[in-house]
Length: 394
Image: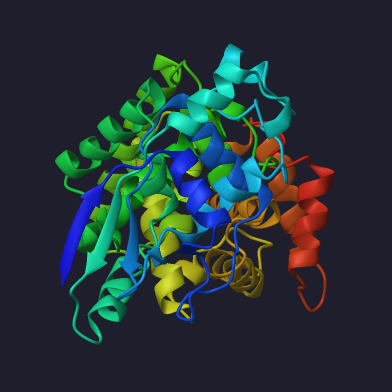
């Protein structure tokens, strides 16, 4: 199989498509699946002069025709734009003033200079010839192996201050000694970056009530300004304290990304309200002991008067449910947080007695303990969270 490179401009490629000398739909190709948004991003890339991945075509033997092996969606987008089927979106990030002026214009409405720039744009073309049966198919298979990049891996392409701050904090985690054995997962696929970016955005927004999505983190990466230095310090301290908690417990605790984020938020809030790291470590160890045993234990019997151990188990059940499913929902984030704080107040009523927010939570849990039989469900928790405006402000 021989691959011959060339660099035709868009005008040449479009002409060959219109003359049916470049077939976008050979029988091995899937249908055209790009929506308008993806097509607009391709045209936007061309207008910016950005690189477009090479296109592979098969030279049909004894013919002047070619079949597209890889690049169908890109060529179809170019064909449709030059055919007037959609207009330019001039508001794509990063926003540029000259592109905003082109917003909403279709091909026939473009200034000649802009149309000429698009037509003159070249794309690397690799023409396949002298091939054995099966070789083009195998190349097509290899070119289209899914990469399945994680959100964190995709965001890593944004070169800005926020991205660098997250990478530095991720490296700090590794330097502290975080790894799969200590935490329960490694930084494979940039998992630490993902947790840190969501933690930073959560405390920057100062609420648990706003859903942190991959898109919202990506949008923050695109901002020209990084995170405030005080937030970076707070994250470093929280990471250090969580590592201390993890290494005090044997055998090692196994957290996932959702529970890690919840513990970091808990530690951040705890540090703003209380000063005793010993108390934090003691609670973390107690919580993990209860979680592991989930049965009769000394931890469950050492409860303050009036708190039923059945309530403690129910609180734990709510936490475990929301740490294993629906993890990104705001309700899950709030329920995990209020579960941790409920158990902390249950075991440390003397510590929280001067804090009105945590005292009110303790009173609510204590009230549920007086019901016979004690009853606490996710609905109860949601009602308590709503009545206390829990997570509204960190």
